[in-house]
Image (cartoon, rainbow, N blue to C red; front, side):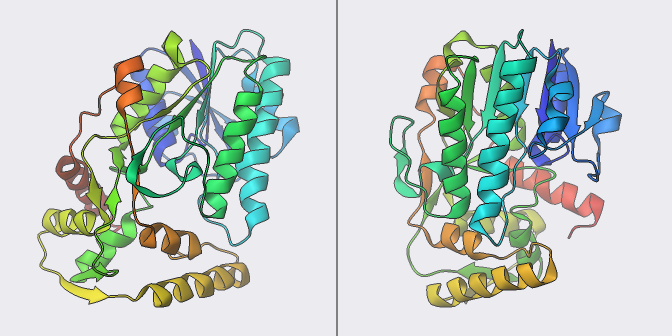
Length: 324
């Protein structure tokens, strides 16, 4: 089958393209006009230029495709309208293009997020209502609503990964760089539980969503059953790097202040800084956990990569490319 992957040159997108090619699928990768295709040319995929916020570029991208995986979006932005324009409106435009120009489509797979249902120390389940706590989660919840509104016109399904780790990850790079300097950031005494999934497992789960008949019209948390925490994640990073760290406590008010200032700086500089209000709120939440039971029962999906292995692979990759 021929699959279109939006956001294909990103962290998860590249791994998904690799998994699809290994499964014998033809892959068309949608990359923004000025975007770096990264490793895609070496994977044997067709790179096409377009943008999910540009409706004129989408008919040619979806035409002739059997599967569409929608991963394109933004995780950092200083304005709420930026999140909604790209993550929500971009999803609507792509759905419209699929409904009008891809009549043979067998599955539309949206990459959603745990952020759409909000933080919780008790594992979230798919039937719980949306309760986002920040703009990113709000935009991903709206993208899910839009996707399910097309269920009568397209065979849609939704993946909701939590924090994703593994080679190529930028979201957790800050913790590696801090640990490399001998620092372990503390945010109070509360142990905030955290769900996560290795990128290879996440990509494999998304391919399964595209072919399993039980996935149509449903959302699934794709996560490891093994929980960690921000503290636990930092401890694993220090172990993988072979460093001893000292604890540096950051009061919540200070972290929120830094995030707000960084958002203002991002607007002025025209680029996204590694710290922002979204990251601050995520770190200070009571927990970010989800129950992967539905994916196991319905799809037979089980995460295979343990946290130590995932962090070890990340550390090795960061060293190879000179990121740490």
